[in-house]
Image 1: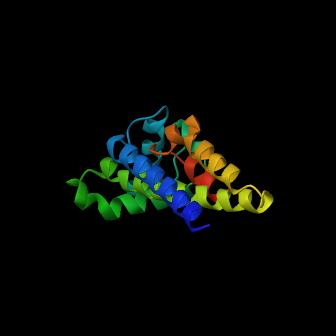
Image 2: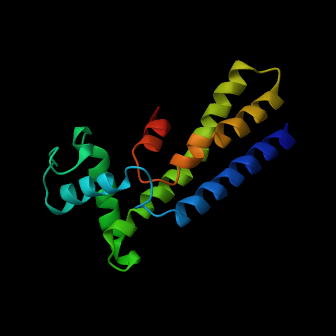
Image 3: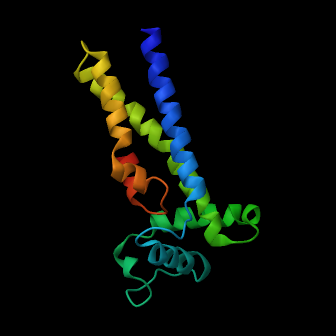
Length: 151
């Protein structure tokens, strides 16, 4: 049992390292809709208003995500040479650290549903954290990874 838990831990640690690596190297300005997401955040934080559809196509989203990430970025902006948009990288790093935790929770659920075959849980964990959409979304500045974590 100890050997299996050690393997689970090492797999989670490996994926955490991969997600952190990708988050650090991937620009917060990268991604399919990063421009409109960062515009929403800047308007909300610096102009202190909720953007309209004339401001950004993301105006249909509720402001909570953008407010929280914007305030976190504002707090860490001095560490990024005063660049607010680059400070959004802090959110990417937070997500990179939380995704393996989600993997652990799913591992626990899968192990509970399949108590007789722990090795299938190991395969499930590797499969789950290897899904391309998770690896693509994990380092992006977007609310989708947060929805995955909360869900």
